[in-house]
Image (tube, rainbow, N blue to C red; front, top):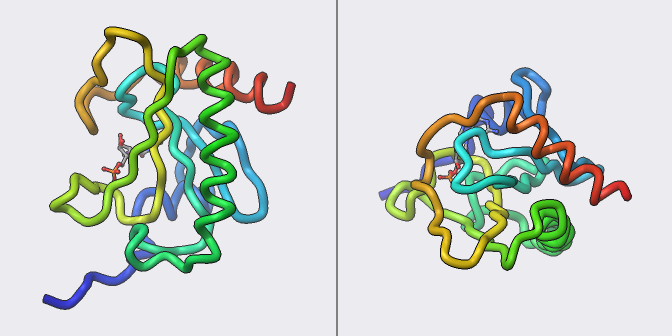
Amino acid sequence: MAEASYDPSNIFAKILRGEIPSHRVYEDDAMVAFMDVMPQGPGHTLVVPKAPSRNLLDADPSTLGPLFTVVKQVAQAVKKAFGADGVTVLQFNEPASGQTVYHLHVHVIPRFEGIALKPHTGQMEKPEVLAENASKIRAVLNG
Ligand code: 5GP
């Protein structure tokens, strides 16, 4: 079967273009990071390259170094901001893997001893909680 191609009407492309809102914690020339609206735990953040690709499989390799540099910065920031014991980094490719939004992104999720992740794409978080969590992460990143 032929690989599906990038669709610029995906929800993260709309967020990157500013057509729909997001709780941003980081932005540079090539990357944006914002809060996941259905977090698997408090502080669940998505790091998203501005360059269009469906996922890792069709991404330009030049995107990956800068992407993981920001993933590391965000992982350190969420660990500090939430006093977490660890950080889970996840990335899905195509529907069979659990991918639901077809613009490359990496999940960065603070983890606490003995506390399981909530389901992937589970419940919507309240906007005020996302805003407060974003401001905690920004405070560390900009501090
Ligand atoms: P995937 O399964 O593609 O790796 O994950 C997509 C993620 O995007 C899910 O964790 C889901 O909660 C999140 N998500 C879906 N729609 C939106 C949205 O409109 N805004 C934000 N910030 N996150 C979204």
